[in-house]
Image (cartoon, rainbow, N blue to C red):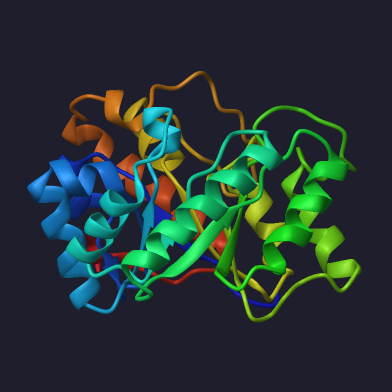
Length: 271
């Protein structure tokens, strides 16, 4: 394998020290709405930034169903000393995502230019996916592109639904813009197994995911070589208290994901 991909583990605020703190501190994907409403969460990631972690503030749409406005995103990013903001996006709608991202970027740039701005590549079909990609790589405000996870079975050659095909397509056709940072959002239907393939691409920087924590809390072990089968799971905010007897399994699952990604980062508490 050519390189590693940084893994940002997503966990409830009560378990950040147990599962999320990194040694060495590298990259964290952080929910803007939690930064603004939860002091424990905010203080934890600010300390991680002081330790050298790159903090990426997400816009809230996955959890809330809508993105936070530009001024709230800037406030959250400043509160945790972030380097990057993920702009508003609309699931499976390239045109709406372009509109939302362009407008939010303009609003944020009127407030400040201190943050890299990341767009999310959504589309209803492959033609829209290509138009969206071409649009974003031509915009001066774009500093990073995030590719959402492949969550449902789809044809292998469908760029808008199968992320490993999309990254291979960009690589094979020389369409990667090396001025930009490329990220993976979430673990998809093949979980950590996808990361082994994605490591072939030198230009992929990071991936985030709650699956190792949620599955471990449910008593489900992630196997290094698969198979990966994820049953219906609650959202991270709906997980509830995690019994201490599951902590070892959760840490095992995190280690499996990091191994697949080629990352040697450990949980600080266990380092």
